[in-house]
Length: 52
Image 1: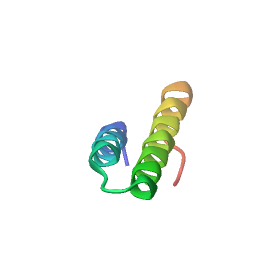
Image 2: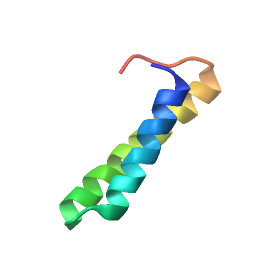
Image 3: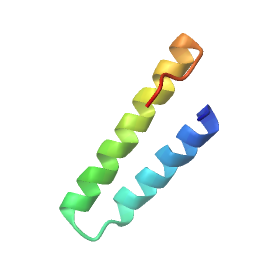
Image 4: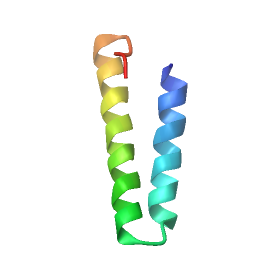
């Protein structure tokens, strides 16, 4: 797993949250995007990705 993968998953999760059909799906996709953003931030700080 690399930063490109995380950025792609982050973008997809944001897109899915914006086009979700219901509130629960919107919330879940937004939370996934937040989790990917946290992993990206950690990788930038520590210079490597921690295992999932």
